[in-house]
Amino acid sequence: MESGELAGALERLDRVTRELREKCPWDREQDARSIVPHTVEEAFELAEAAREGDDPAMRDELGDVLFQVVFLSLLMEERGEGDLARIANQLTDKLIRRHPHVYPPEQSGRSEGIETADDVRRQWDEIKRDVEGRKSEKDWKKPALPALIYANKVQWKLDPEERPANAGAANPDREQAEAEIGRLLWEAVAEARSRGVDPELALRAEAERHAETLQK
Image (cartoon, rainbow, N blue to C red):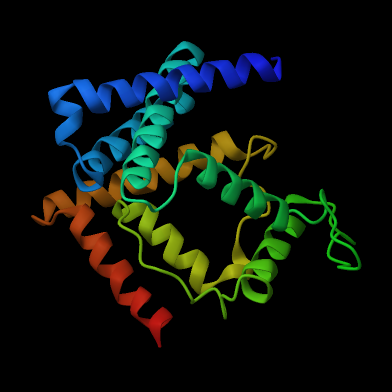
């Protein structure tokens, strides 16, 4: 894609978003709190399209997520708290800062010995701690996530060295492992139902109990 084509497409999207904010009664009434639930829904729909390997659906859902980003950026601009350009630049700076093996700063030495995805994750944690001021993996804000994602996040924070060596597409055992774990989770949900327990609430409560140690 030519840079001019990308810039033109984003400018058109920005223009339409501003027109909707000005001229559409529904869009005029929205604020961040009313929009974010839609953002979460769109993110889950994108995740499902990715899981299904449905490229046309992914294009559609990526567009919906992109609109959420542009619209929320416009709301911040209206409050004088930033705009899409500032957000994009802040993100780009963070990506460069967190990938010194790709964009090595002078005399940092951080790009040495980075050969695997696991090396990148360890370096990522070091940068968040040493450069961005997070004292440890326990220095984090509790996210509003579904219980299963939240529990996974808490466990990663509690045992950062136990992160999987490769959870990506290059993992040769991913499909078999997913099937086995899926059966275990299905059985846990069935057990919860048989005992009259909401599995989402139960897992959230257990994750919260472990998360309390992160704040100590």
